[in-house]
Length: 240
Length: 97
Image (cartoon, rainbow over all chains, first blue to last red; front, side, top):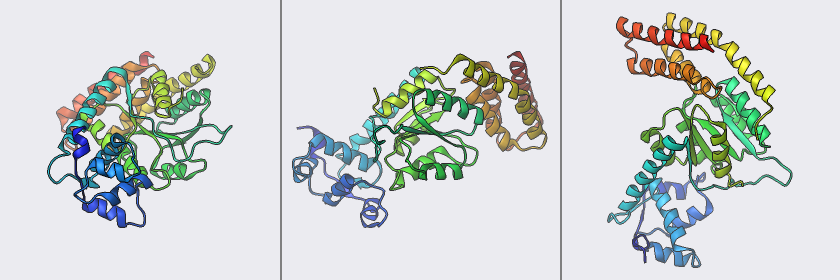
């Protein structure tokens, strides 16, 4: 049995608020887990209560909830999570510096495009010429493209139907902070599962840590290498 | 799959022809002391120029941006002179394309 299976978590004030809030940002499975956190049940016992759910998958979800501050481990049994997280950050920075991108596991948006409907990529880019170039390349790859440059345009573009299947988000925008936008998207019930790739000029550890902590699905460096960008987008969307 | 060559050439030509206007705007922002906007616009150029196949222009823009960010609000004569030198390099690189 893995050490992580014996971990015991408690609900934090943030987790408790999430459970009692009418506008929770968490998914059904995460909420189900939160309800079972009582400071006594181990990860393995929780998995059993979930009709024999895969222990490793439950452990991973609990680790994510711990990273987000919804739960904590009172006796330090989950302390390794932080180490693992920082290890992931370091490995991501290395990949970003070496390859120009890294992506996490593919995330499925809550709604997939209907048959015949194109996958929509929302590009958040304040340089209109660069946005035009990105649009041209993405359209050639058969994506539908939506461009937003300001906070107001981002809000509007996120709310338009169909919902974007992926957002390419610049870290530094004229009137908005990319990390703040990322955080708001992740807290929004309708769009929280939309995959987000952050675009950054600097492959810094701090930046990657900031993005991963807030739920970014990947990073690409600017200036863009179009081939790398397309690979990153397709990987996050799990497209062949 | 790549876009047709002529379409990319047109976008690149449009980008190149917009550089003098961008540089003039940098000068105007510096003269007006609007350094926060200058940082943003240098950042934008730094991010886009390389994508358009102009890495030296991008690198020069990023050097000027980094210097300005490091200066903060305190742009004393020596730091301003250094910024103007970096903008001069940027101008030179932009003229070369």
